[in-house]
Amino acid sequence: MASRPRVASGSIARPAKGITHPDKVFWPDEGYTKLDLAQFYESVFPKLRPYVQGHLLTLERCPDGLLGECFFQKEKPKGMPAGTPSKTIRHKTGITHYVVGGSLKTQLALVNFGCIAVHVMAGSANSPRQPDWICFDLDPQSGEFRNAAQAGLRVKEALDRLRLTCFAKTSGSRGMHVFVPIRRGPDASDVLAFARKFCERLAAAYPHELTVEHSIEARAGRVYLDPFRNAFGQTVVTPFSVRRRPKAPVSTPLDWSELTPKLDPGTFNIGNFSERLRWSDPWAGFFRARQSIKAAAKALSKL
Image 1 (tube, rainbow, N blue to C red):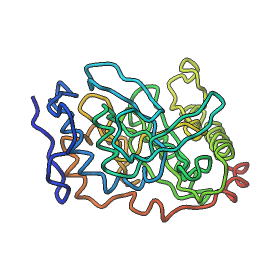
Image 2: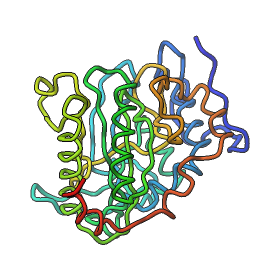
Image 3: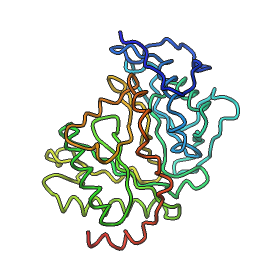
Image 4: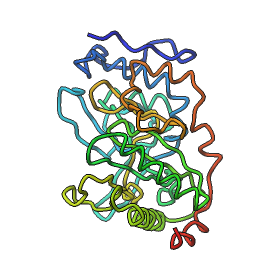
């Protein structure tokens, strides 16, 4: 059984408070426990906070870690700490009271409810239909990250031509995400339309590498460019989110120079992430890079 992951230097040294059944094993092969997960989020929360601050969360609850089933929940759970912020959103199907992120207390409470990953909407609680970013989700059908890495570089090249600053991260699973920070203003439907057209144009330019075919059978081994994370109500895992997968991988911000065919995203996990935290953060300037997509939208036809 693996030892508990080291807490990053300079982070909160005390054990996470309020965690019930702290010794419950969530990752049996590595021996990582519920407390290990809570302590990890304590250590990274200063970096995680900007991506959840004031944003709506969807909960992926895994009460038994890798040993049991998971389920998604949008409604704020009963039993959350008093004062936990929430936002009421009216959908066609009814009303949902979402948890609003931003505090370590809320994050630890979610861990206590068995939430391993952090799933966030692009819109804030104050402007839920006006995204703060565009996300391109790159899913390699082969399961090989090197294909996702190549696709990520294709996405960056195209965004560079549109003069849009973008940021890369591992998904914590087999693929990767490319984020574009944007100024609030466009409605989620307009952002989705932009993302769809971008993906369609790029897939047409590299038909043997990329596809927008939703059907797995139709992908024929190509990397799927998924724009639908940008639809209103959809979520994506945040940077620094742990995933419910073997070895407890972390969705890790990358410098573009790191994105090579040799990169193994499984390298980044809660057992060694304290070492990564000693590096400079490749996403440190993310929110300072917010930009308009008006000119880029007009230039898409020339991509």
